[in-house]
Picture 1 (cartoon, rainbow, N blue to C red):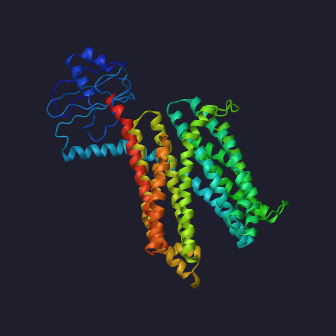
Picture 2: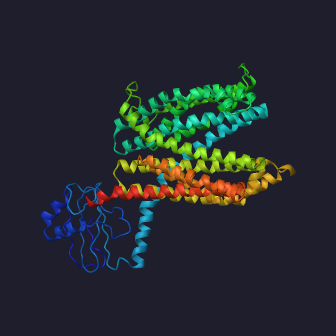
Picture 3: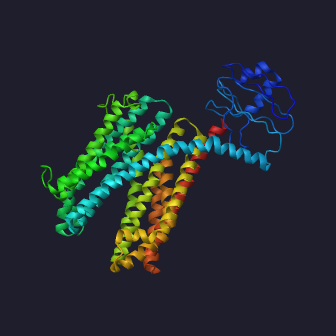
Length: 570
């Protein structure tokens, strides 16, 4: 394992024996050891990135020379970076590279970038992709379940569809409050997993399940009282009555749905995101069959109409939760952690921490949901054609958002795991890779949407002569929304990366600034003041989302630099 640096005639330094430390090298090797000490004291701030390891694990160091040009650069892989003082450790492996020329030369800089891309960025990209793809497919599966519900409800008539839309508005306002709380399970569990803290892993899941159960009780009040709420908001009594029946069926599925989200976060935290995907794929046909049977009274089941669709959804939510519990309790590697040990104990301290992290997440989600709901109201003021075009554009945006959400959830896990290891470079790398992956995906999909915008609009609105204006406006909104699609994907991913650092409070302020201080006033100004109509509203939404995404990116960079500062000074 000894070698002479290429192009160098200086003698080799002493190679340490197994279990030695830098100070041992200094004491035993004399001048060579002191030279190695100078190498290890370097901050590595002059190179673009530290070079990955080359060498034998378990040995202290292999030296080099300082003959002409710059000395060797060694990277301690024990989890710390030596600063002005040495730390006592068993160095597992070191990387040395002889730089016989000017480090600022294009050739050397180019090779350093190639090495960094191949040995650091590419492995991070692969790991993020392994997490993101199953998560994206799981989210698409849940959209498929909702779409199949609406397709079956549509056979009951226009009143049933309108009532279901009103019911979903009430339901998702409550569900968003709960989902923000249990999403916080994922970063806490991932940090515990990175530290090999099995007890912390169990505590995160247990607190998340208890929080899902306890928070679901007050969340059921609003759906159970959905009829009076809708009537108080001025909706037609017939539609309010239908929506109330549907909400009664949906209300009892809130607790298992939140529990399934907590289980998904736990499985993703230990790098096993595929089981939730298999569960959702099995649930899609079961949901279709059950909804159809309960709506129409087939196979001996009662005919419940619109309420049957809500009951079927709740039953499917309960089934997915039970399946997740069975997999975590019995399957590998989850059973190794004994995740349900002492499940009856309520960890109030960790639940308070989950609430502290989760409430800002829910608040930011509600602000985003509220601005788009308000934009729909503005479109209604403009006209029916504008409202229809807006809904088509939003439906396409939802599909793009789900793909970015999967990458954002993967970013949460990767950043949280790096944070658990106290790996500052890993935090930066995870955020960079997730951002690049999301931006690349958004650009490709945006180009595809822009090129096929007329076909997509006709897919939703048909090709009849009566819908020509709506198709034209939808295509125009999809063209204007190109910037919006990319910004929306970036804000979703960077919000996920910040969740990995347990930093969620500032996202509420950023959402308020981006959506309500910039986006919505600009949409009002351009839509009605400048009289751009629906196009002006979408320009305002795009600018507000872009501001929000920019603030999140700056926040992540600032936090990464703040975390790195004491680590560098060591």
